Amino acid sequence: MSRTEPLLTVRGLAKSFGATPVLRSIDLDVPAGTVTTLIGPSGSGKTTLLRCLNGLEVPEAGTVTVSGGPSVDFGDAVSQRRLAALRDCSAMVFQHYNLFPHKTVLDNVIEGPVIVQRRPRPEAVAEATALLERVGLGEKRDAYPFSLSGGQQQRVGIVRALALKPRLLLFDEPTSALDPELVGDVLSLMRELAAEGWTMVVATHELQFAREVANEVLFMDGGVIVERGRRRRCSAARTRSARGASCSG
Image (cartoon, rainbow, N blue to C red; front, side, top):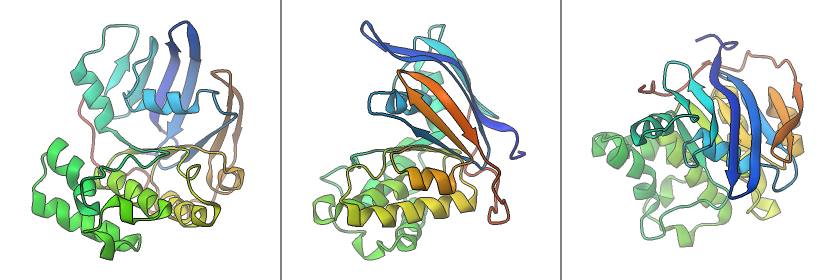
């Protein structure tokens, strides 16, 4: 897939909670192998947009299309199978980690590959172990989340997302719950992923990160994209234009 071809296309996405509109006709194109950042005040719709892209929230209108995967029209009744196909294309890194407290680090990471994707456990363990080693948490594989710092828990959350081999990584304010001294490690890992060619959509208040890493910055307010800013970035560091397994339609 060309890096200029959209991996993700969103048209007319709208979502309300009760009588309160949260997203108002969002249009978005995310080319493969690029980083799109969402900035804006709290309550502007950034998190809701990410959750709609992942199928965790169901919009009232609009379409979400993944190249080579599903195209979901939310103006019609959407089956659970179609939502599941949409979820299979992406993985979410949450603001508050969302690790299972009763499971070890390793078991948190392999839960999705083994239970959801039905991959062989030995294969999932080997890949999870390699990913944990990569982020400096190999020795923590048998630890429980309560024994980890916030930064370590968030790195486990990123590893858990990577273990699913998604085509699209979604980050919901991944550093906002961290102490300031822990933010750097998480942002450094995200910079590495961007350099490797992962397609990423990141809701963030880290404006310096957005300035350095993003191919496109979207400013949201009141449920709409108010401003868009693109910049050309050197692609020499990018080794792949699209990552992960293909999606099912």
